Image 1 (cartoon, rainbow, N blue to C red):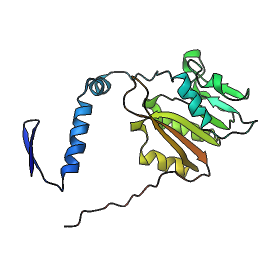
Image 2: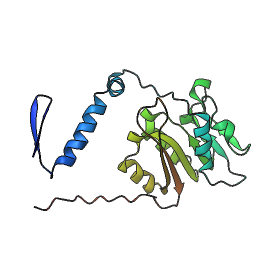
Image 3: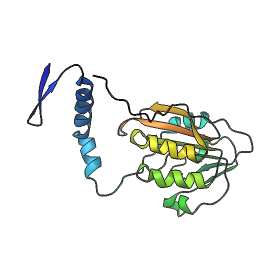
Length: 198
């Protein structure tokens, strides 16, 4: 048995619940870090993080495309995605330039961008409404949830590709999630609740 004193409470752990401790310890320390504290306490979301040029290119290169596909960058900002799209059939939105993604209604084949993480549900819903073949986004690790994957599946999009990566000075890991129409998930979701047998 292992005994720890955490937050003025004595916790006793044996081999059966040591995994819980490890998870608790990591989570507690991350959320008490300066970064975690600042994220939780800020009054306004800070969603402007410019994707490094080389990462935007790597993201684009993950996508299988046709020569006549129409590419769409809904959050253009510096143009690190838009300027590297492989053809001239491309469109963009950028709220800072008066072109709001949520007002966009053109048919496109591929959506590829780094969206604001604080609005991920609204972004995914709008992407689905545009009915592209591919929705490929750079998101934070906390934005990829089982429920969001299932919602995309219900709309006919499988999580076809997933890349985990780290961007210097960004909080936590980032994921490139590549949803494609009528494709299978690259991960298996098991909603069974398993119980420990005594």
